[in-house]
Amino acid sequence: MTQPFFLPTWAARCVAAILLALFSLSAPVIAHEGHDHGAAAKPTDVRLATRFEVRNEDVEIVGLLADKNLLIYVDRASDNVPVQGAQIEVDGSGIKGVATAMADGVYQLPAAALAQAGKHPLTLTIQAGEIVDLLSVTLEVGEVPAAASAKENTKRPWWLLAGISLLLLSGGLVARRLRRRARERAIHHV
Image 1 (cartoon, rainbow, N blue to C red):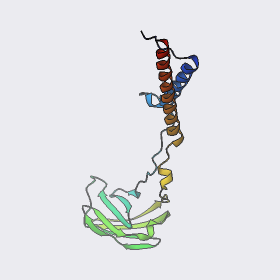
Image 2: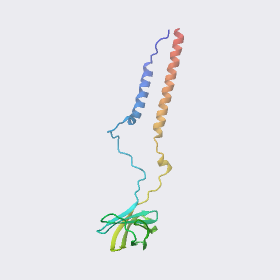
Image 3: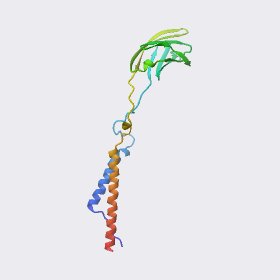
Image 4: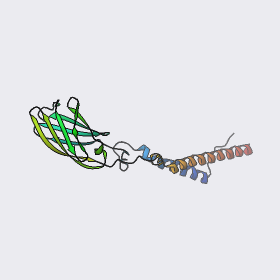
């Protein structure tokens, strides 16, 4: 007949400490809806396209800096219909030219000079049928963030993973040792 297995006091305390440590490490994982466990992590690369917007009683114009081109979207203010066949002249620091029509109220102008960070005041002259207008806008280009290094992208708490691994390993070794002692006791008592 085998005797029941009981843990010595020191071993029970070790097992309890290991279980408590594992539970405390997993506490953020068991959070549920409605609880906030600190500030939300900010996305690393949030960049909206650099743009300007201007509106008057006749037209609504949105300018978008894409790569090294300035895309200009022109719509009628009254019904939001794209304005086609417009002549748009852009004048500013380092840029001067007439935008070419692409499709459905979209016009394009090469604008490599606008890719530099800073505020770029621009004057738009638009002529489309009865619409003739002179508009001033400012295109504000922010600093382009440097690419994050590989080291920053792999920020993992290595010490946490190592600690969990060591706890599991030591718990397994303690359990193995306790089982071996229990077998030896059972053999000596028989």
